[in-house]
Length: 423
Image (cartoon, rainbow, N blue to C red; front, side, top):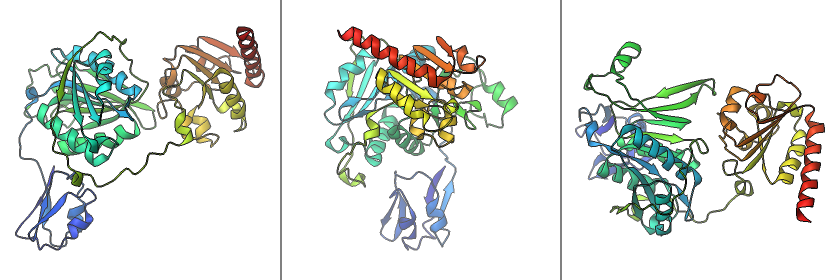
């Protein structure tokens, strides 16, 4: 879809300019002109009193899918440090590239003075690093990053682009997808490559227009799976007629490749046309909140509480356990819905997916949505009164008993062993 101005009807009133939330309309003389920032949100159409703006179907014809190659990973960095999810996605990108065949895994590195990160990207699986470096990109801004990324994708034509489902990834990915007129599947928990022909399936079970798609081709579309309807079903989504195929992926879901410092790759420094006028916001100062210092995604030990705590005061005991073992506090959805703890602590399909070395599940029954978010933990220790609780099916160690009696014993024993070790 695209927005266009009907010049004969435009009166130059500028109401569309005021209505546009993306600064996507310029006045050239007395006529409104749509620029590249347009996301086809249609706010200008509603604002125009003269019916001088319309939304049209793209007349560019079918996309040449064969022109798009390689798997790109947006390797998010903050203050010169790579986010863990970026390294996870390089591992996943390697898997997808192998499944498709004849594809490279490429890291897209955007920022300023990021040369020191390039060897780390090679070590974790990047065959090629596309680097976009500019002082205007030192701090993340939606306008700046979206522009340079969109331009790079148009120039180099990747087949797949992956983002971490972080605050930045969730902000950036839809802006880029809208400008490229392609699809985006958000918050994925699984990615696969279709190895068979999908056309007959689509014709039989969907109303999707498959005209222009070769019925004899082995299309190898990216199958993007994400939870839907509050995690009650898992939806698998494809993007068969547009490129690139784009996904945001939950941190902690995918596995990193083993680091190999001897790996090397190709570096491509991308030319760009970013100017200060392209960025409508200015980052004056970055202030980190105290709660941001603790991350469920990066924690090696997580102590989670659920409905079995009985009331919010139970999290005082969970916090004491976490402080003792050097972990962070997590929770089930039931505890969050009850208002006992903030959503930022929630583990599960509708919260954070985690892979710690040790996961304590205290008073958590083990609904499928919670298990999906923590069952890949290295060691799971479950404490529950109900011997038939589903959590015991995935637990490495299960303790049937009152958590208010069991947890203090764990704390006591942990402290005893620690004291002996320190002697």
